[in-house]
Image (cartoon, rainbow, N blue to C red; front, side, top):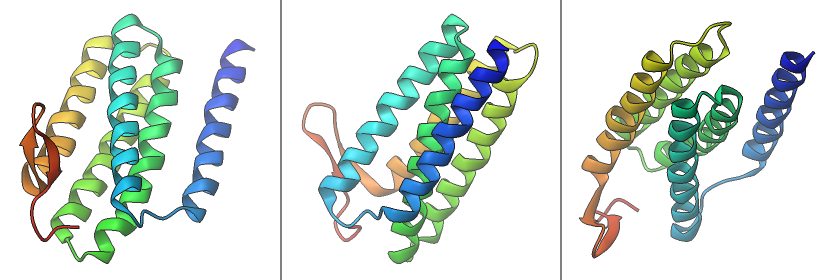
Length: 147
């Protein structure tokens, strides 16, 4: 029964996100920045949850990341940045795989941690390297001509 409640909760969060996504669009730099901060928080929380074995909590954070990435797809498509659209699609594929791992009856914690690390490094890192500049001290910003 507990597992059913957990899966139902995750499904409802994902459904609510899908509805919100269909109504939301990133139109300003502030909205984009807010979305990126949400991604950073959700990614960090997912990694922490996986590390502590709280897989339901990790799946909730994965659902948030999936929602956010669904919003990124039209953002980059409108800017005709095919490589960024590819990064987003790759991220969604990685998130789906990670979610599937975390849904298994027995979760391989080490494999899940590795998959989460690959998501952050290969998906987020690739896009950041391509489209932004700056550092933690001076702040990050888009390279000229991107936004």
